[in-house]
Image 1 (cartoon, rainbow, N blue to C red):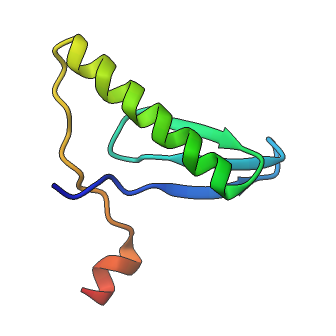
Image 2: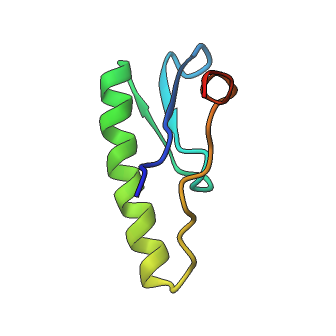
Length: 73
């Protein structure tokens, strides 16, 4: 199985980095560095998947691909 795509971007308003996983609704995390944001979103992803499993919710397959990867392929 492919893993989920993660976006990481700097947020002026939050004065730090935000990481999110588009395929997992509302799965995001904050960090003062891109590396910290990535580490935190990996923790959030595991919690998201565990909660979905515990509640019997469907877990989406990884589908999101930024346009740049679609053009290259």
